[in-house]
Length: 196
Image 1 (cartoon, rainbow, N blue to C red):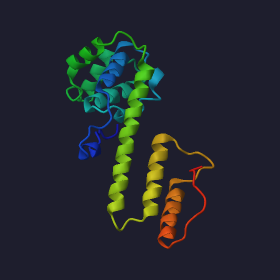
Image 2: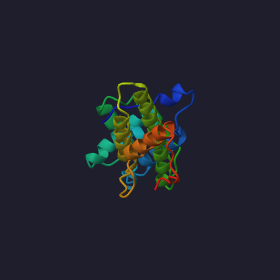
Image 3: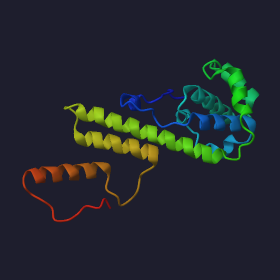
Image 4: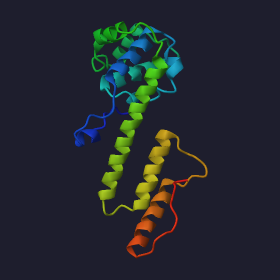
């Protein structure tokens, strides 16, 4: 599976990145408690990085792998899979898995919980993309159009923003830069841009 990460960019600004560890634990507990739960939320939990806590990412990685293998998902199977992956301790150990499962009585709110976690993940991704854009913009050798194209690709990939009839991020950036240049030269526009 992919690289485990906790974006440090928010820490650079003295803030904790968006996350909800208690909800992550509730999701893991529900997945371990109800064997068929994961099939209801696979579309929301495709990537282990949707979880903020690295040990939770490792657990989700094992769950995703069991699902791919068309194996059941429960406490014993996930514990065994983590042991096979040599990541049981990185996941917090068998006792931690048992404790997390023991805190959950059902998977009743699983979809809602996964939606909350997905939103937190997307916020962390926006922070990462914004920080990367900022770093690229401080490099005087980088073409602004290249940064705009990169950002648009990143946003479209994460948010599925391929909407017909809308200006691309690159087009909006070029238009904005042209407006700034025109204003510096004393040329002003008489209409208001609405973004549509």
